[in-house]
Length: 215
Image (cartoon, rainbow, N blue to C red; front, side, top):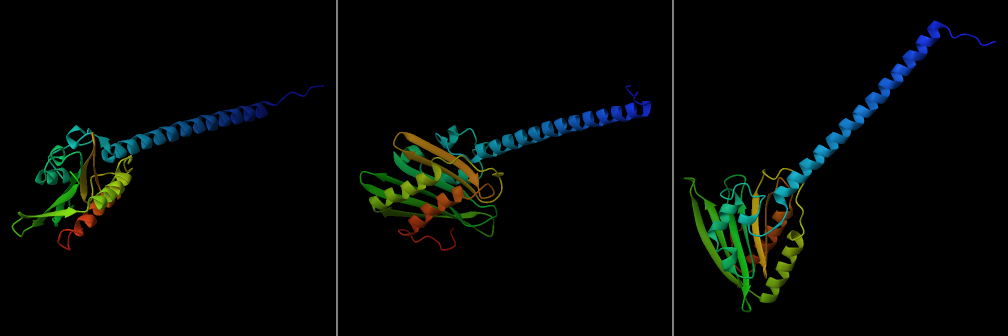
């Protein structure tokens, strides 16, 4: 003889089913929200990387440059253009977060001669800047070596994950034969461009009496 299920037990079963369904719905909802948050974080990181990754072309052709008249890019105006520097050349501009001594640097190799120029911007008490220019020559073999190191740091760089608006800003253009690459970044993003700029500055110090306060 089959015993009938009491109405109370039926209600307990129904409540159990409802609770299970609610748990399943909640798990699905949390999974969807977690997936959306992950996707959003990936988009955010991609946007950040696009701001500082290395691009083909000059800075004016670089779509990540939102304002070509501000920051480190303006420092490059004190130097010859990358096209004028020639087919084996580089130029770097640095802009400090606070009023501080800074510089723009260019180097090239042409007809077996390697040479460079460093323009130092020294802030004055009246908020103007004093410019001092240093020119130097370097052994071509040593120039080739430092440029290989510079290219190793920058050429395949895919950008940093953090915001690239804080800290010291950097901008560079590098021409190697028919190919020109460029990029902009800041120390708040990561240290890649800082490392590349410091490499060139350290090299230039061997041949030019640059201020010790320049870094």
